[in-house]
Image: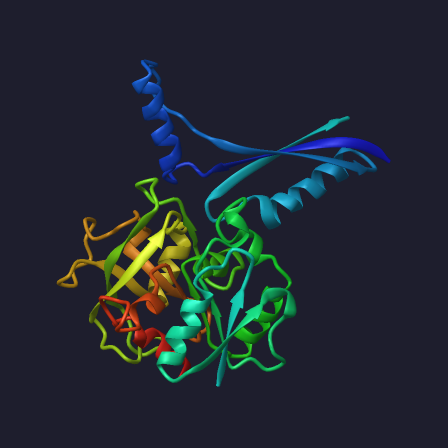
Length: 83
Length: 225
């Protein structure tokens, strides 16, 4: 078994309104920054043991599918690195 | 008939639901989620509140609590199940009903009376009304914006499973009358069975005449009578 860190990034699908991101963007603009868009995302770092990177990724993928993301509004991606 | 009002850590409308139901002559009791449902539940309410502190997403944790397997089984057997506010979020997170409830377009918590148009009167939840009726019920949520994928929304409309839409006092479903940016002004939907429904507004807060400005919500709870 090898130790991996799987990083799951969950973000709203394109086109789904993100009022918190919009508010954050406006706050940055009030501070004098210029930017044309702001997108926020949640990142989960999962430490786990697996036979290989592929099985670590598969497990993290299922975790995202079943809890970390809501497929109605979210896209997600999984990246695995050996620890 | 005894309605089980499922209490999670952070539920805070469970007592209100019990009291409103009893006011209507419907027996109800709170059930702590870890204790599980009675062997043969007569009816189930998933109450409002902030279960598990809204961690991850509102309703996400409670939706995956073991008691929800019992709720799902009961729902599939035809037991009436109503999700209100956080209970609606739990219902959608658990897949009992379609779509998702997420951050209000205003990015604010909103606590205010709203008007709802009754889109169907031939369900247990709306039998007390006529189709097209306008009722006044309060909302109190920060994550009540109904989102749904385009195909799923088409299906929802085609199957006539929208129960309530936000409207103005005269019953017009308009953008101005939409308090939270919900897709298609949807405030409440049916599950796969008509005996399963969720809505963001609080019918139990519009039932008791001594504490509410409106008692229009009582009709929803009468489904359990």
